[in-house]
Image (cartoon, rainbow, N blue to C red; front, side, top):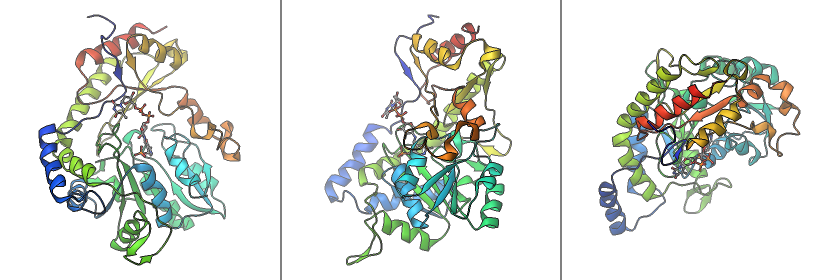
Length: 375
Ligand code: T4K
């Protein structure tokens, strides 16, 4: 087998529903001329998605970032919120957009999720909420976070952008905390081109979320707050309805690819990856590997560049840490000495290509390259 791929392979590639099925639904939209504002596909998709995910109340959004921003407004979060620096920048940006001070706490060393003990140590009188992320689709310590939230009277909002369909002991991870936020961006396990959702536990909260994503309108003449326009449109909702029919088989293809990667990489000294956790229904959002330079004999960046030479374009999600960006790096909590584990993992990670139609040759060349490049 040639050791360079003919065509570039990227970290991900979206799955699209069959075009024929989509055009059938587009015809209906063309006929009824309802394009947005809670139309029939929106209503149908919201219900179907809540059923699929095993959650009670779900509100669709035009993207995950606006859903995060709205989640914070729903609960009137102010002051300081404790969050992880090891995430996509949108997590912390949602705080910034709400004039909330982010307080970074370090991650734990196993799954690189926010460390509850570090969170507890960072609580001040100004703290109002905790915003953990189920990073790469590995569940946070949900019991301990709930305990801390209850003890200190804090709200708990999960950024669940990587946790579509994730279940722990048969229960959706999205049912924990006050709110969970999903992203259906093109690069996610489940996509509606762009899209997102907030999951909540009661009808009144869903009502408030629905007002806030539609400018704050409660009825034709009543505006309850300065809400934003974050509605999912009918074309996205129709696309999402079709995607739901295929999601289980797509996740199962991801599982096969991850198994193959793990089998090939398990015995390479200095290359670590995450295994499945008993009792968790994994959805395989990402396949991060962690390069330990002392054992592997090469740095993460050397391997990253080498993979590119073979036409394999992984991504260093999540490097740099959010706390390193100009907007946030002046914060006391952003100092690297406050975040030793996050700082280390950000220098070790590469997410390898992972998507259902990724072919075996590409995976084999990826793993061969990693093996052969070892110093
Ligand atoms: N919270 C967390 C924890 C998140 O990870 C994210 C998003 C959010 C919140 C915010 O949710 P959204 O507002 O996005 O719904 C991507 C995505 O744009 C972003 O959604 C995602 N996280 C983040 C981890 O990754 P980029 O800038 O790395 O994506 P990009 O455009 O470089 O795409 C990566 C590769 O995917 C490309 O090299 C090729 C392929 N690709 C991409 C797109 C967009 C395609 O083949 N087709 C496509 O349409 O940010």
